Length: 395
Image 1 (tube, helix red, strand yellow):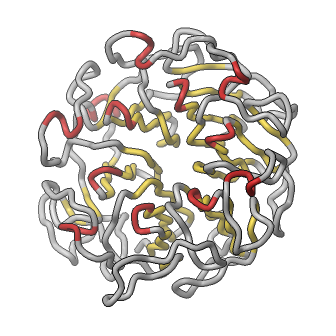
Image 2 (tube, helix red, strand yellow):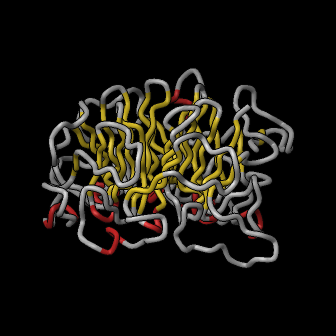
């Protein structure tokens, strides 16, 4: 459920944004029973291990999930309607019952080592293959198991998997632990987390290893130091993870600095500073929960996921095991350090325990939620600590 900042109630909804008060409509992954202490992690067509991202292509499907710990993608042809519904497809393993980095073999066109971010990319699909230090792109949406990717970014071919292609410096055509990927109005955005930067391709790449056109978070394409080698600023990043557009504005989660960065419009030059941040009062202060143990309505702790839906911005406040929502004001400049308008996953803004006070998972609890995406009336939450994906109906 999403609860109002002014009236915390399990039945209070926020204008045009609300999750069902009954919790997730569908839970994908093995469901922990009251008499069980652990959830089985062995790979199958129903189980997941620490999923970090998911993408619902249309309101009726398909749905693709990055089953991160099993080093594979799981695909459902149609939007699942039942708990623990079996996936229809797998990419990255020979079948549903195997796991291991690169299928315990060599890197290829349909293998993964810690897949994370995933998004629709024109008519196709893009996946951040984090520990292979690359982005895989399918030019058309895969509709079967182990369809090979058409393009790779960050590497010169589909076999190599060294960070920054084995160099100690970055380049416009290299990646180091890329986590997030986002496609918007013909542009491809990649959170190149290990290089502490965001890369932008102004057009959807068409060549293997194609270099990026713009960089944010660093002064140039070869630098890769934390916060640009200095103190935190409006332009620097520590661990960027996810990307979205909110109206005409670019939004990036900077988990390492415990903040969300918002640019006024889409940047057109390298190292452009953001306009405001959420989670911190100033650009140079970057403490977890603003230096206080307990969170508040304006603080964040390792926010990984972000999504925009209409006037609302949803943030997966990962280490606080909650979702926060902000309503877009007339000017985004008024958002600097603003308090959230709504919360889900916790009973109030001062709570932070996994599954609400470290209990068993429920249909409306969260445990280190890494990703949140919305398609139509369905919110898709990668509830990584509970080894599941939640399909939450928006009202």
